[in-house]
Image (cartoon, rainbow, N blue to C red):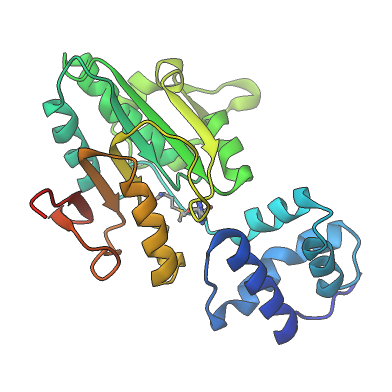
Length: 273
Ligand SMILES: C[S@@+](CC[C@H](N)C(=O)[O-])C[C@H]1O[C@@H](n2cnc3c(N)ncnc32)[C@H](O)[C@@H]1O
């Protein structure tokens, strides 16, 4: 079936819907990207036009399809040990944490889970060496599709470039037979990791404070008011001496007051204020 192209009017409707549901702001140059991301889905539903699809999304009668559209429209690029400086810092912070305490880390826009399992590897390495005996890592995202992949903990071998060979040996199982070419995260990490769907633009669920929060490479999709709302909420569940990481290309200058930068993309609440 042939689909007419996405009109400007239809694009604006999708853009507004995505903003309403996620807070994400799509710039004007994203029309082709949006059309491409939704095209196959519309064809597989045997709908005749983008307008028919939009009508279904805005009707409020098909929340499953709305989630599917959000899944398709979010950008989920991620990889193991992305921006490695932050994992060095995490290791230093966790090493100094009181041993009797549960050290808690949250990856608040975790995509397919590589960031969470990288955190888990760093913390488990500390445990192995006699530091940080108790830790938990949490991952959340808006997209259900990426969370399912994260929970499955199964990755293509080509995605493991950033992982040192000794960590590969300790924390991954090599697939065989139908799983040839895949690796599975070891159970000892999976047991300490949990995933949940959390939309950062909505009020947060009740959460126990975290020692470290990762919010990396997500803020770039938001305008200042939404960035401010998201960061303010995250700070409300950051432990008093906790650290918030954002992506190295992101900055919290002009977003929220009262933070001190302690490293590239790393912030603490300024307790002197
Ligand atoms: C580019 S990925 C970043 C993944 C990882 N943090 C990293 O740095 O590699 C951005 C993630 O933000 C998520 N996201 C976008 N809007 C969100 C929202 N309102 N609430 C929660 N997650 C959101 C997307 O679904 C996507 O998986």
